[in-house]
Amino acid sequence: MFDLSQKVVIVTGASRGIGRGIAEVLASRGAHVVAAARGNNAAATVEAISGAGRSAEVASLDVTDSTSVEGLVNGVMERHGRIDILVNNAGIARDQLMLRMKREEWDDVISTNLTAAFTCVHAVLKPMIKRRAGRIISISSVVGQMGNPGQANYAASKAGLIGFSKALAREVASRNVTVNVVAPGLVDTDMTKAVAEKAQAEWTSLIPLQRLGTPQDVASAVCFLASDEAAYITGQVIAVNGGMYM
Image (cartoon, rainbow, N blue to C red; front, top):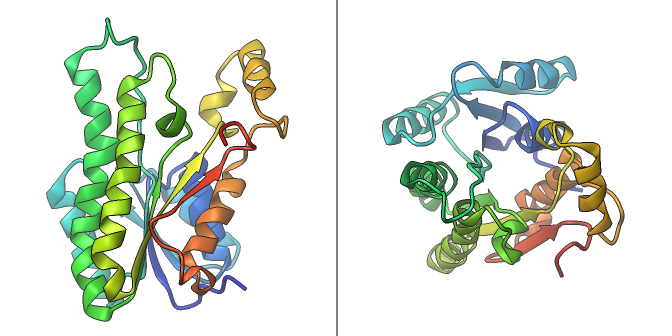
């Protein structure tokens, strides 16, 4: 089940947290993972995958630079002749109350979290359509579904991914390319570990399952959507939030 052998996968933002978890789980199912991040930041991810006897390569990528994205995709096509799965995971937060938010804080988040997904999809779509096969999975957030004070820019970018994916799913379904979204809730990553224990306890109290999610929880949903078992699923949002938002 969920066999991804012979599949070539690009995961953006694969250096840590959810992105690293996704890369490792997809590789464990047999996929060759192109772990993409700025500079050589995904090297540790690839080392972990290779150390487990699985297949991966490091890719330097600035998702906000269309030339960088096109160069990555062209390189993968030259080396492997195919791209089966794209996971749009790269993202940033620049939290600020709306009255204090600067235009660059808005632009940075929209550019990295939303426009970059457009750029990556635009680059991989033609080879996927040509092969009449492909999986596009974008990582949104519970914040894009329910909102959160101080995160108007982040919420807009993550909600935008949902609308973008639903429209795209309708466009490419006839070419056997599926497009779906995974919307994580609060996930136990380095970012959340840096928050005070009191705040973490308050967050956990909002979650019916009474725990933070893990990168592997999110990765498992991505793995399912990437697999043949999900061939009849497109245009959907899979919420991985412990019941925080229903």
